[in-house]
Length: 194
Image (cartoon, rainbow, N blue to C red; front, side, top):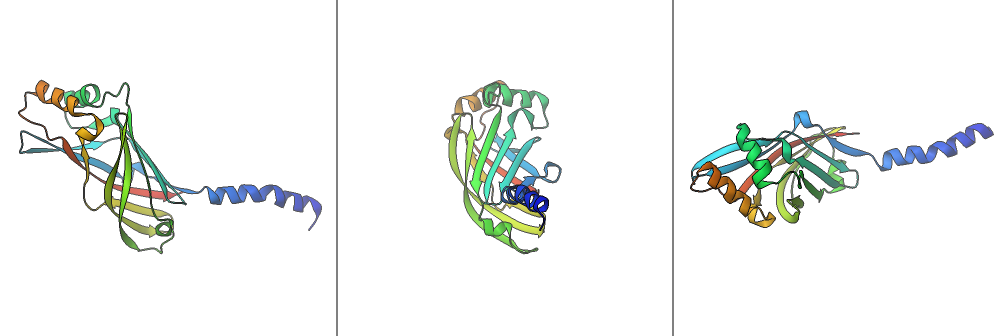
């Protein structure tokens, strides 16, 4: 090998290594969903969703995600505003963040493999972090796509995140007899390998 080629190879090797070592799986928002259900007056359940959220999984299996709490959609504009100001206080706490781990072997599974996992996700909401159990399905669709979905809802309790006062404000302003403080969260997330 001539010297210029050798030098080029030496210079490019770290770049090639770093692009592989730091490859990750990035969420495809248009093909993903994140939803939650609230119950008012003991019997009336309503479906809501997050309009903006991001997530990624490193090749080592480290999961990180963020939900923009200013972009929640309850299908009623005034209720969306009340969630922002009275419950989540988005001027101070504009996002919820999620971290966790997925077995790296699942990221290398052969196409068509579907695995059920039980794991723990760390949710930071309203300035408080709690560990929540999660039962997920992880499906390797092809060489570059991974589908992760909840098999059972992830239960988020307002009391665990200092949100009871906000729930009570919402109940009063809406003239309701009750709002459930435990909320089931579900999702389907499509990841694309970078």
